[in-house]
Image (tube, rainbow, N blue to C red):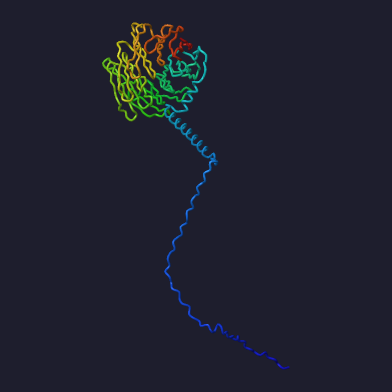
Length: 436
């Protein structure tokens, strides 16, 4: 058979002539001139102005509770802040702290325990201590505390042969003279019981709880040790050639007064040291020839007084300025409160010859009057003076004016006023209440 081959054909696009386009002459496009670029300013956005509301007398603005809530919160916060500030200031003003103060106040609450009160704890009555709203009876067997209504607050057996009580604003100190034991109490409980290294000669307790114990010494004649309210020793003072017989503490517990004595050529030589706790060197020293300081006690106006045989001297704790009252008679009694101090000057040969001197807290004599009967005991409450004589109690004001009298039982040894015209009387066996 014959072979057939495909014939290759080249296909070309035929150019078609266009009489219209070909007759138009082509021109070169002119180059565009470059312009310098200028930064365009940022457009300022117009601040929209708030449209003023159209006043309408019929429209009312309704406020929510938020202002009231904020006001209440501020009021509550102010009240709480005031209470906190009051409690802080109040606590700082309390000598031994808020909790002890509250505890003592609760201990004082209570009705009458029922007069007469039997002192059946054993032994005879030794002494009484008068407080603001209570009193303490010290017997040979125990120490008992009562509020002014006669309610028994506490009873502590002691077993001391010569018990002595010293009292401050919230606490009292019990020690045994010539022995080594002592205890610190408030109106609720015993706070501390201690034993000194040597025999106790004297003691004192301050309003803030600081207390001082004077004892004999192994290396010196005597010494005084001071403890804070938490029974931590904060100071010790040694006396080489004299014997301590009295101590006193300022109400804030920051200063210590110590009286010492010795005999020179058959005469007493007494010294009164005023001490701080930074040095053994005294802040001040007073010397008295042929005089014996019988006692030291705190008085009003942040002062204390020393009782001598025939005189009384007041000292300011702050600057130690002093004033003296001298008598030609012997000082038998000394009592004081926040406003007054009274002293009984008498004659040992004639018990009915008595002179009562009334001084203010600074030791300035205000009044003086005589009492022509034997004085067994005397007490001071506010502006009233109570004198126990033979089976009778006399009530005077500080001016020496007799206000009233009341009869009492035979054998009364001590008196404590529990109100202006009511007196608790003490025998060895009981406590009775007498009203005038």
